[in-house]
Image 1 (cartoon, rainbow, N blue to C red):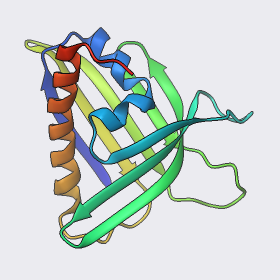
Image 2 (cartoon, rainbow, N blue to C red):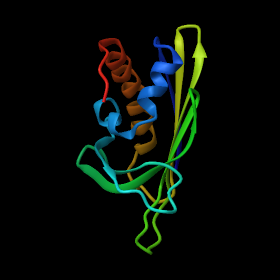
Image 3 (cartoon, rainbow, N blue to C red):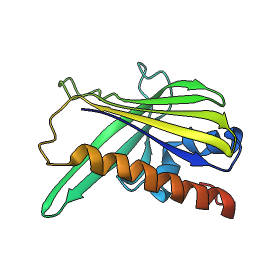
Length: 150
């Protein structure tokens, strides 16, 4: 599954990027991220790592998952990418979250791409996730206006 969604923000790209680069801020504004804890680095990690609780619900259908995510790319103030990297010797479905910030007339345009290599057999899951990124953009906008951090 591949999802792409955008949200306009009035904050400048530097401020937006400061929130995006640290996964520990995501539960405050992105509803599908329920919890985040820093996790010890592994020798093969290209960047910091977090244990992330993800979850979605559509009516009676609920799915939650804990994944270990590592920041694999950081291009200040434009792009950040997180990828699932487990070091338990087992194969896992890919999770890749990419956030890109561009200058826009209103301030910034946030575009998020989510790739999930597994199977989410929920009717309407892609529209739900796309809408959650839009709502998350509005919550991030509020967070930036209030000056909240971390």
